[in-house]
Length: 256
Image 1 (spheres, rainbow, N blue to C red):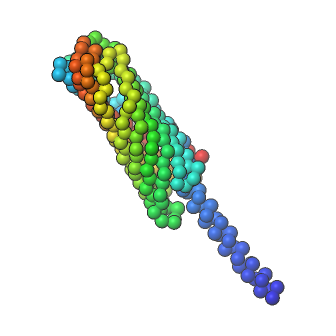
Image 2 (cartoon, rainbow, N blue to C red):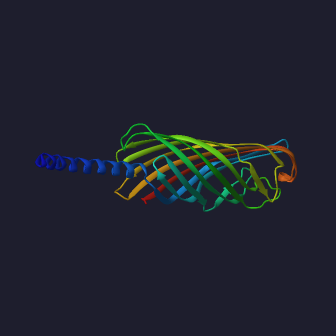
Image 3 (cartoon, one colour):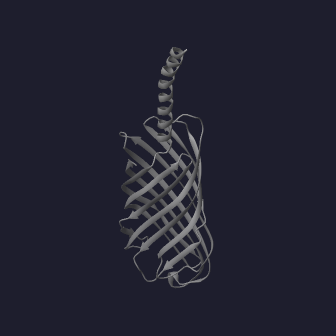
């Protein structure tokens, strides 16, 4: 009888070791946390329209730096913090001349994720709640057609992840309501209605156990309707801003 139990334990130990190794591999794959940084370029268009003034100008290639961190303390719960710091460039105006311009973004939030299947390479869908801030710095002009501005507001996000071996794809759609709006040195009036939305597409390629490279495109559209009297453009009544920014990033990611 002792011989039979000894044989059974001998067969069971390797099986439990493999099971524990499988659980560890699954946990490590699903709780992958990273920090990243790299160069970026911002493209887009800035518009302001009012009954007595209108301007539309294009961003061709604003250099920037992108950095951030993504943490998954649990496989289904994650938090992130990321920023895009513009390095400044000259903005050509339609009527001639140029203005110094730069744009900066900060986003922070939490995500809840569901995996579709038991494997470590199973697809996943997620939903998130976060906060986004956009600061645009513009050289002063008179009259002030373009002004420096800061907007902050909450946003909802939803998306999916698709692992393909050493290659991973993630797509995200976002919608938000910037509730904090400040402009200087002039203003467009009283912000009555705000809307922000956008999305991100990210492709990541592993270069080893710790390092990977990610190519990312992040789009942000933001519209603000103003009422009342404003001091922009030497005095306006009502107006609308439309900011469209597309940020292209190529970053190195390090696994924590």
